[in-house]
Length: 109
Length: 115
Image 1 (cartoon, rainbow over the protein chains, first blue to last red):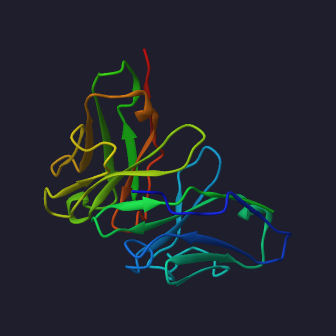
Image 2: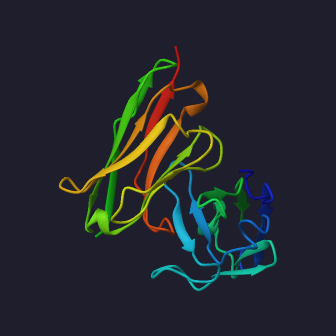
Image 3: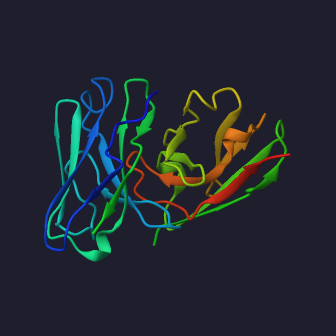
């Protein structure tokens, strides 16, 4: 199972918006609405930010939003804050009843 | 409060075995599907295994199939990962994560496979 494709890095200034893409295939991202996004700070465990493509867990800021078009999912962070600087990973359920993660994107604010 | 605490990591020689544990608190583990996810040093996340809620049905990544076994002990509210025939490329921090959406994660336990 090949990893989902994410840009290695993105950057933005405080207050701006950024979008991180996550490209898969019709057997994963395109075939199921089970795409999630995770934030990981250095030395820490990942934290769920978005699930089921667009849903936000309780406690996650509404500055984080998710979407999907075809085989590509996206995470948008609006009103960037310094605290948003972290690595971000997408994941998707697959047709083989497995999960696949993206390679990760380093966000610099 | 949901809490997951992994243990059992350490240094093991190639070809050796190790059993990881994940102790759950704040929820009843068997009512949830559970996962193991690993992260090699300095690299990205890799899904390893999933056990379906209230069953013994399990799924594995191709990279560990036939070598790793996921299980749970309902009485101890704990999840396990038995790892056999370990290879250098299995070196990673291993996390347990709850549910289909990986909504809660432990702090991880480091497994190093080296001679």
